Length: 208
Image (tube, rainbow, N blue to C red; front, side):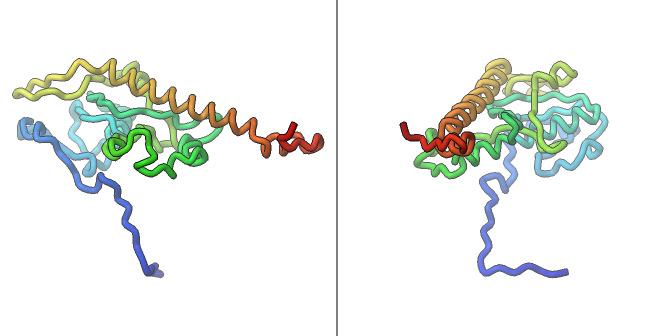
């Protein structure tokens, strides 16, 4: 086996390379099996009991989907993470964002400035070639959705009453992404180079 070599190596692990557990997790009984998302492997690795997934970032949503599709009874604490369409206007949303130069934005150029560093990523799935994650559809199929986890008292869990707000906010962000893509698409249609390629026989140059 050939071992690759390099003069320089960039380790781009982002800000999620160290597991972070909230102190609230210490209040669960020792009889409750707890796994950080970094330790999850498959549905078979968990006991055959209902599962509570806390958080709807990419890992939380993808794990909840995996458990749900495996037939587990899933309870999901829905946070403020945004969602995104996976495919739109015939392309993957990552392709659109790349074409729109979104990934070229520096922190100083980003509308949210430093706050964007701590924002959760949009939740989508890579399963089956990539698709959207629709929490409302999961609820129709039997997944139990709750607001953010507020407190743990013995065997009783308390949730914040922000489920609808968080779902609505995630939907609004998904629609805003579509609108931004629509605007970029329309502006591309009006670009002189595009029109020249569309009507070459007319010699369109973009000049009146």
